[in-house]
Length: 246
Image (cartoon, rainbow, N blue to C red; front, side, top):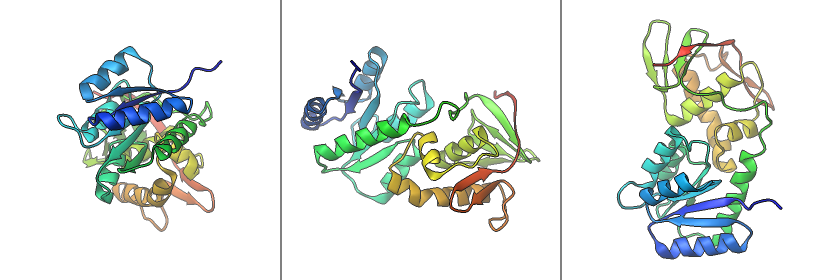
């Protein structure tokens, strides 16, 4: 018999923690709760967690900071569903930039949280075995550019550093892991840790456009990230791992 997925709910509101834990458990999942970042890390150290439901507005370390730290550490592969009392689109974008897989505003229905959790778990498990992210800590060369995967920035042929946002870095890293291969939006969604499909489908073209600007690529006739009509995008250049980043 399969072990139920283990969901960790991190929220300083006890009522919300208990409501979600009870509802998820009744619907075939295993649920644990934490009131803050300290309790969250204690749970991560002692249990195998499949997904984190993380509130943004918490005293001390807020959800955005915790999400950023998760993505930079040993639990970076655990999907994160962010909750917030604020419905501002800026908060949503910042949450996704920090590495959240989906975003849900309060008040919410418990059944919607369940649906989002199941969708994220399904997306993160549908990747074929030959489409995984390579290990970090490398300098990746392509064309006239290098990507430093420790500092998470671009370096041009003159040594000039070009900063990248979190979303730009993750998307570029995906392209560099799968050069000269057409990637659909669904594959980009999954390989960048997943996103809410509606949000990501509206934003993937924008992020590609921003990456082309960073790469000083002609949007009408790009040399690096090319559009494949009715299919997706392809990084149309060879890639080489140069050295361990220091």
